[in-house]
Length: 334
Image (cartoon, rainbow, N blue to C red; front, side):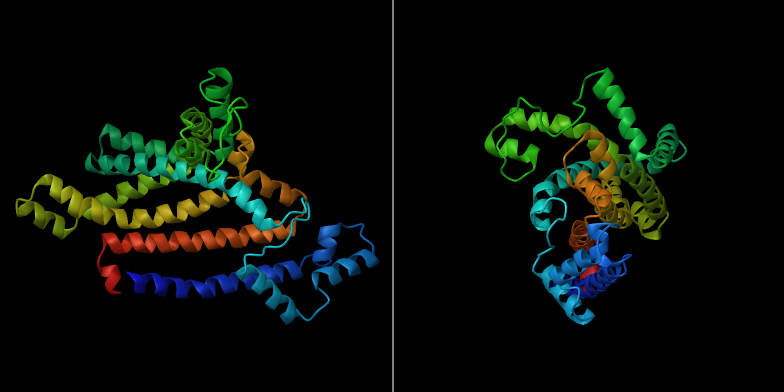
């Protein structure tokens, strides 16, 4: 297992290096250079020269790239032009909210999607199969932004069941330990704060889970149908093995392999795609901060965000490989 982890990490180093080269070239190919992009179109030549000297952009390209790469390795993502704070500090302040939202969304998608896809395949052609396939198609087609507005209008504004914005109610005095509001309430014994955070999390999480849920349902169904037609499943049934053993050990276990890959990719996309959902519900995560960085042309924040997401993708891919090795022993051999 340790050899597998080390090998996967070594294989991912060229990916991160390649991404760093692309980001560096993008920054240096901005119209007028990074200094003009930061200062705006009305910047004078003297101001551009001063910023170039301050950022070290007047040095040879290979020196600039080496400094850029060294800062990334040291997790020094620079300083936000808009707030004046270190980018890493800004991310660590806001990312827990986005991670909490993304984890809740993927849990909803997996807990609901895998059983639904499995039983839809087991009852192919039945009402559950038709309903799940039709529902998953609708889930893929509906824009997340539109679904967020609909859910907010119905369950928050009209019915008043869930809060319409934020992570905690104004009257809740919660202790911040990890940055994850639901978990902090459990750790500190402030269960009212944990419940309030959970209620605030419900609508954004369901909204963000819509597309992953639809994808997981369809992929699980297709994978189970494929495995059910394999010879080893028919052989296991012919030997008289218990139906629960055949379904659990042979069908579901093998059908989950492609689903695990999809879950890994979907989790990474949720972390980078929560901008619209957080904006609608004013959730206070990284999404709204990135939107403001785009509007304000805060390039250090954008570069740091891309590298941060790339590192998370590396970690998620590693976890997917580990999950593969636990389910399929052949992966450990190769």
